[in-house]
Length: 415
Ligand code: GUN
Ligand code: FE
Image (cartoon, rainbow, N blue to C red; front, side, top):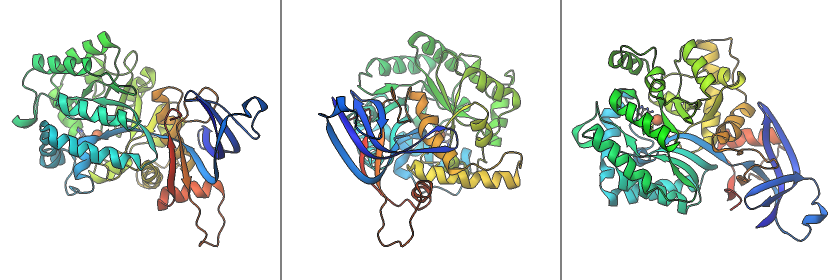
């Protein structure tokens, strides 16, 4: 139940500033009791896992990704979002109606997710109940903490991958929720995005959220053509955010993650902040499907909840270390070409988003602090061939830019 981890702990209790401590983290029943420079006498009998000079960082939370898209990750980069969905996404997600295909695809996904710094994730599956339950089972068995959504989609989709009626969709969604009996993997309501979900369906999903207390995830203001489309589909809505908010699916009582938020209006920003909606910043995906660059620095520095998302397979990598580096890079381009009043992100700010920024969606997660759940990744980044010595912040930078380092152990809730 109780043990100590010895090593070099790096986290970001304050936005943009690393904290480094060498010592012992004491863990009891999955929860950190504190980090101590010497092991307090009352813990002198507990087991100590000594990781020497390795870096120990908080487990990362991926706030947005599509597990069934992992099979085509790293391909399909020739078109922008709306065409990409039609040409690549729907055909592949449709294949998950076949449970054998789903088992294989999700096993491949979970296997590779294990080899990343991610310990928690908020995930889109497909419209299929059985395949979604299979994904949840595999994630749970692998020890991940996750919210997973069976997709809701009843319009603007091909016949083979479209729910036939609101009644059937609600029936399936309720049946799926009832079967979600996993330890650390929970359901989340998942209307794909407004163009995929009719108003009456969205309304029923809002009722379901109130009835069950479940959260929701979706996409918001990712692409200019998408925004025009939403205006045409919902002419009486105040803005894109309102197409969720008017059904009670936009924060407040309904914990919400919205992916992208690249083109939000001032009014939408105010609503996001007031309702405590989490923003999943997905810069690798935003580059690949030609979406744009979100003002992540603005959100981070002005009291919004923001974390990072790999958005696989719009994003080409499951590695949030890669996504961190890209978030810094694109923030520089944004400051040059879009708005120089927002200074570029620092790597410490990106690290904050990847750890405690997204982690807080799951509760006390993302710091080595008394009372926080102990999610930690131990990385051996030693390179005896390099004559240069690196400071801690440089070691983190190198992990993000070079991907160097071996993950030698991962703790999720202390396990
Ligand atoms: N908007 C609606 N569906 C998707 C998706 O699968 N990926 C991305 N990036 N955006 C979307
Ligand atoms: Fe997405």
